[in-house]
Structures are given as C-alpha cells and as structure tokens.
Image (tube, rainbow, N blue to C red; front, side):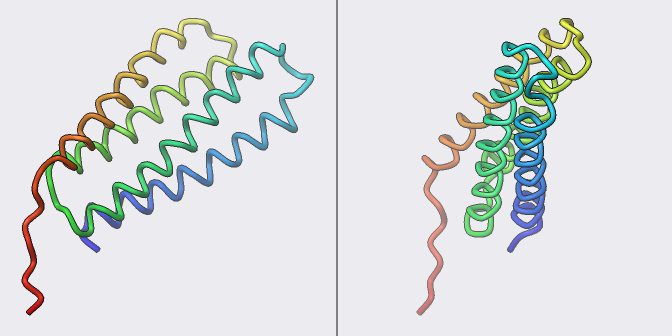
Length: 132
C-alpha cells in the first residue's frame, strides 16, 4: 500500500475508534447531563464523524491502486471536515460556546469538497497495469 493509502487507512481507523467512543460518551455520559437539543447535536457530530472515518479508510484502500492527486485531496478534505465539523459540534456541546457554531459550516464545505474530489478522481481513467 502506498504511503498516502496507509496513512489514510490508519487515520480513518483511528478516527472511527474516536467516533465510536464519542457516540458512547454521548449516549452514556451526556444523556441527562445536557439538554436534549445539545445531545442531538452531539449525535449529529458522532454520525458525520463515523461516516467520514469510513470514507477516509475507503480513500486509503483505493489509493493503494489509484494514486491520483484528487484522491489524496479527498482524504485530506475528509480529515479536515471531521476536525472542523464534528470537532466544532463536540466543542459546542461540551463547552457551551455558541461561537463554535460558526466553524461547523466550514467543516461541511470540506466534506462536500472531499466528496467532489473523490468523484473527480473516480471519473479519471486509471492507468492499466499489464499483468501478462
């Protein structure tokens, strides 16, 4: 597996573990400790966090076979989106800082850009490997 592929698989797997831990923390430690709307915000963060951890693992696995700049860009955008989107929502819930809500859309834009970069990479013709 190429350097980027292995890096994205590892980062995605670690991110997935953190997403599961965050989801469990929300379900067990935050229930009853924060208002229901803040708990719903936490659940949204954990959901998007886990989805994009899986996307990052997929980017890493595909990167082992398709080494395109847009694929690498998609991985970094998914990672940035996770930090900005989920991170700002986690902080919003834990710290009760409404100003963090201004960061969340930047993470959403990074997610969208990541998916578009992935689509761009998928639309490119991969070089054929002669296994003859």
